[in-house]
Image 1 (tube, helix red, strand yellow):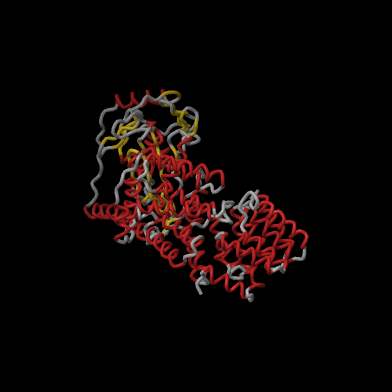
Image 2 (cartoon, one colour):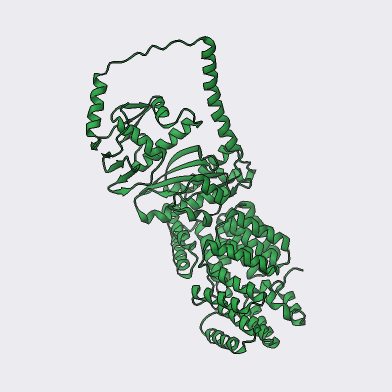
Length: 629
């Protein structure tokens, strides 16, 4: 081989150029997201354009003699990532040619500063005669020792890799990279990431980090061990997606998070309509690689094969892309895409499940909110039932149906059955554990509720809503200092997360720190314009702190607003409770009962109602709502 390229060289080939000093590959001047071993490999190949670089030569240059690695896997993965970045193919290569069992050759024309080097290298190759190197033959004993060391080295590598695979009980799927050179394909690539997470999360013996936490690492370059420590996982899956029309190529690799070693890598080429089957295949392969224990149901799920209408699938992914943004505008856009997907393929179950998720949160006081439960919850039920009619294995559809049964039907046994079915299908579904905890807490099963809340946090440790949820558990079990501590952790993740400020206000209120409570709630109100629930909670604080004028003013605002929008009368009742006006409080609670307010299920645990629990009207209300004893 020729010597290393001088550090000040820029090597050009096709539309690409490699800045050797910076270790950067650029395409038409734009940086290509490639670093580490693939860039080093490209540098070696460019030093010898048109010449075969053998596997042994690559091992010598790129893998120090005292480093134990799985050479075959590492080289295969580096070549795959390099070809992916160059848009190259092993079947019809434009840049890198594979010579089976020999090595690789860079076959494209190299231009710019490397031209002279290329010429010198080719002349040297032509003029050089084959050289036979005579080596002294070592004594047999020394040869045996050398052979044993070599074989022992390979055995060591295999054992190390096997040990790493055997201890993998948790992993994170980092956001897949979009290599399509089309920013509009981000929704598609994020959708591929979500699908892979969902499929891996179905494996009950494996803890898989949920979407919200891993999306914090999108387009963020961090060492794998650092990510592993932050997410507390044994392994990391990363990869790329390239789309051209209806054709997609996915590269995926499994990395030992602790040792930053490649454990497995593969490329997949499919059509968009086969994307669902492809995600199952990748998840199944990873499960086999790490020897994950699969139940018969899990094995069947990962082995399932079904094609989808490409246009409907694309519309569904667009819908999910907007759904995760969790605001009124994005939900409306998500619903539009889900409905378009259904129009394209009425037999496709997933968009119905997406609609159910939208309707559920539109009727929630503490989420998107603003719509009457009687308006949206029946639609959520219908969409979830339709999804399950088409595909009874959809975990999120069972979860949405459970939410409707709990918050609207007040059917605790029916809701619990659906939650358990959802979690049996997808044990790693963080929001399934989150919502199931609502049922357990509302019915007084506090220890079980805490276990589910903590499980949700293990699966989604960087999610603000999951962190707030644990604080909410402490709040409704009168552990106010623990609630405040947990909310402080949440605000470290996102200082502008409205629910964290809101709930911190609720905790301060219970500690009779009323000015601090109002300050936090005012901040939440600024972050949630138009949300009447947080304003009514401020009314309750004003009432119990003796500022009756401010409380009455908020009551007037709520009554005025009720003429043209939904107002949750449970919240209005809380202000009357704070003012000591019991008759008005129960009048509002009875109206909230008739309107099926989603807050009614918390009658037994909401500490703001403590002053009226001894009233016979309260126990009668609890009985009519049907909260289990």
